[in-house]
Length: 121
Image 1 (cartoon, one colour):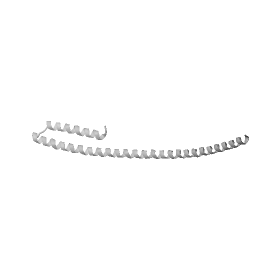
Image 2 (tube, helix red, strand yellow; image 1 turned 90 degrees about the vertical axis):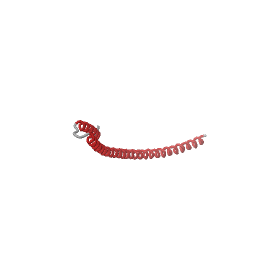
Image 3 (cartoon, helix red, strand yellow; image 1 turned 180 degrees about the vertical axis):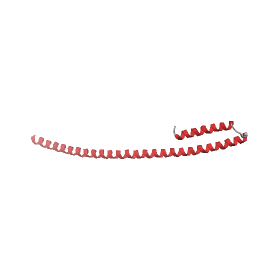
Image 4 (spheres, one colour; image 1 turned 90 degrees about the horizontal axis):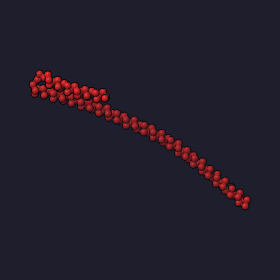
């Protein structure tokens, strides 16, 4: 459990224990005791609300940090992929040029062989 959860659990348990002890040892009348309990319950509710808001802010901050971290990693990966793609695309273009040149050379050789073959006939 986190510190905040432990704190809230302790706060609730303490409030309940205090209320029970207050009822058992109350030197006040029933009406006065109920008023005191209502007041204390309001204090506990206020404390719980404050802790809830504090924890909610922390969670929101963590969510924002997590989203920011994800975005940063995403853009890093995206950049790396763009670089790899550019490298592969460049390599493909180089291979394409090389293959075109070899095809042209083979076509020239085939024409030369045809000429030699026609001369021999």
